Image (cartoon, rainbow, N blue to C red; front, side, top):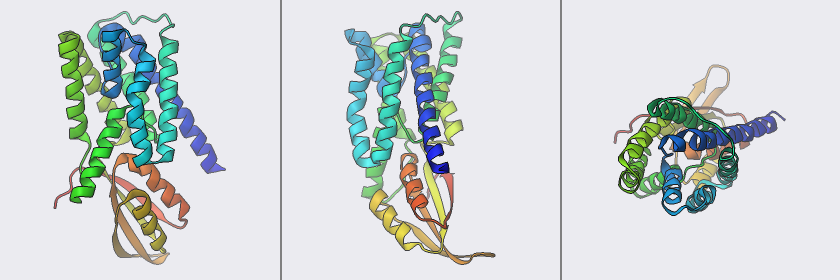
Length: 278
């Protein structure tokens, strides 16, 4: 029962986050000559240049990334992401019809809009969803690099390169002021996201203490294509245990939580890793 309530609460907060993000984009950022970042930013550029419907453009740009996320990151992630995207696009439609004007300087309005956007995206990411294809793209690239090299990388640099490309496009195709204000949106929004989600773009270390590690190890290998470090450990009350250590990306956390929840009698922690040396 508690798990069901927790899941419903997570879906509701994804809805709230998507509405906050769409409100920020339509009512604050675009009227003040700024745009969102990532694939939403690409969609806004296309919409501005072609006059094509914004919400439909957002969906069309996001859809290929969502399909890739479904294949690689799993069904649960895909459900939460499509929920967030549907609510986000509906919000774009609704807020376009809402008379709202933030009567202040562009700089302050964009900083405030970036903060609201960051809060909305943080709620979506915290509860296992995503409405920006650049984050899915970065996660997939990190997974591919890890599979090829056996090394764990942060998504930071991939996201940075992706969004530098977006802002160069804004600078060339729209104007210089829009590019600079949009860069401010990125700085403010990502600062809030990193603080609320504890650096979602970083590698996560999952530590699992259990008496029966075989099934967990098998599921981690099957569902996440990851391996574990296994150590003998001893609890004062529980006695002899096994401690498993596994390194994953933020978007793989949902799958890991599902694996842990299926295997009762475990004690697990998640921590953020700034750097892995080899």
